[in-house]
Image (tube, rainbow, N blue to C red; front, top):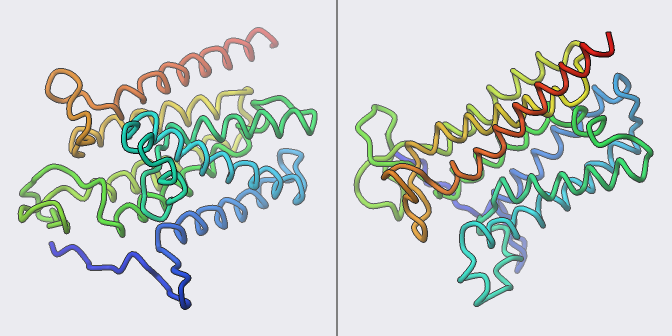
Length: 260
C-alpha cells in the first residue's frame, strides 16, 4: 500500500504553524471531555470538576510524556539541547512518562477534592484509550514509529524508512490500545466494579497490547533490542504495568469479597 503523503502542518497562519500531531492531542482531549461529561453524574463529578481534572491531566500528559521520552528513550540528545522538550509538534512523547504525569495529576486532584486516588482513576480510565487512539494517528501522520519490513498486503513504504514496505505499527496501536481497549473498558465499567478494578484492567490491557505490537515495531535506534534479539525498551516498561494491573485486580476483588 502507498503511504498517504500528509503534510505534518495542518494549517499555517503567517509564522504560526498548527501541526496535525498537536491537533490529534486536542481531539483526544475533546472526546475525553465529551465521554467524561456522559459519565460524570454516575461517578459524582460535576462539569467544573471534570474540566479541572482534564486540565491537570493535560499538563501531566505533556510534561510527563516529554520528560519520560527524554529519560527513557533519548537522554543524551535532550541533555545536549534541553529546549527539545518544548517541541512537542515534532513527536517524541513517551506513553509511560505521560502515564506517570497523569498519575501525579490524579493524585493532586483527588487530594484537592477529598476523593481517593482510585475514585478518580476508575472514573477516567475508560476514556484514556480515546486519547491514545488519536495520539497514534498523530504518529502515523508524522510518519514515525513505523514497523519492521513486511510483505503483508497492507505494508507501507514510509518516508525516511528506506524503500521496503513495513508494518504500519502506529495503526496497530491505534486499533488495539485505542479502539479495542476502549471497547473493553467501556463494557467493563458499565456495571459497578470493585474500587481499583477498572484501573487495573486498563494497566493490563494497555501493557499486553503494547507488548504485542512491539514485536513488529522497530525498536528505538539508540537502544535496539535489549535482550534475546527481540526485547525492547517499550516491552520492559510494559512489564511493571501488567504486574501492577494484576495486583490491583486481585486486591480489588479480594477486598470486595471480604466486605461481603
